[in-house]
Image (cartoon, rainbow, N blue to C red; front, top):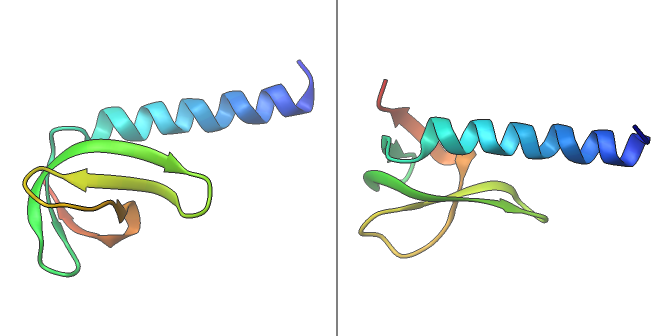
Length: 69
C-alpha cells in the first residue's frame, strides 16, 4: 500500500476508535461545561473536536477534564 494511503487509513482508524469511545459519554470540559458527547469531528486545523448535547459550539477533545468511565 502506498505511504499516503497507509497514513490516511491510520488516521481514519484512530478517528473511528476515538468516535466510538467518546459518543454518548458524559464529560466535563475545562471551562465547566458538562454533558454528553453528541458528535465528533476531525478538524483539519484543530484536530479532534466534540460537541456537547445542550451546548452550542465545538470544542477540542483536549478540553475534556473528566470523562465517564
